[in-house]
Length: 221
Image 1 (spheres, rainbow, N blue to C red):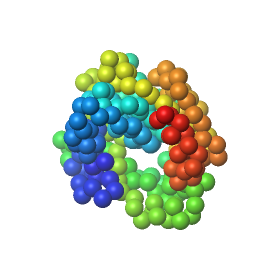
Image 2: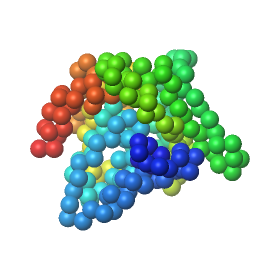
Image 3: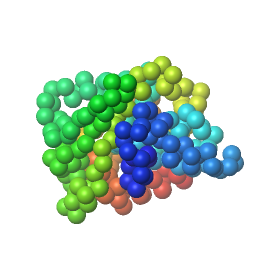
Image 4: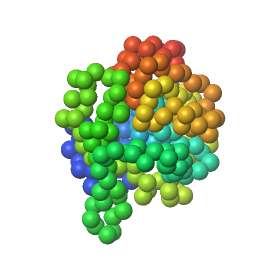
């Protein structure tokens, strides 16, 4: 995504989920209309693939939400974050040492977040120490783009987003997006195909790669 990994953009250059998703949008646009892909969205990446589903439903074979935020086609996407915040309200220390900042420009409303070392431990609790240390070196600020996702025009449609086959994969020991909230999103979006990873923290691709790979192969075929 933009402002992530090796992408050179700065998070403060982005204002919308579409800005953040631009690399994915470019990739999907480049695909011939007779080709379909399997999209896997992890964590906040569920919002990115949801946008791609709305824009390119005819190019997606299946969309897999892996321990991911998953919007519905009834409310604006910000509804999911509102419900998540309400569900975690009793956990005063949920965000631990995560830093939240605004850009400082009164014309801009983006709030960024930067995961601290204690919060990352929560994400990597069952993963290897090596993966955790690597994550510490690769951290970059991100955002939930709530300034953008409450707007009516960001609402996803049943005809496009809702027409794509959706599968949800639960991480059963996830402390970032707890299993109870993952199940709530599944029910809220009326997803019928659900898999559950055993003994998996939030970073399922690192914690349980073989189990996840087997599920993905099953889903694809």
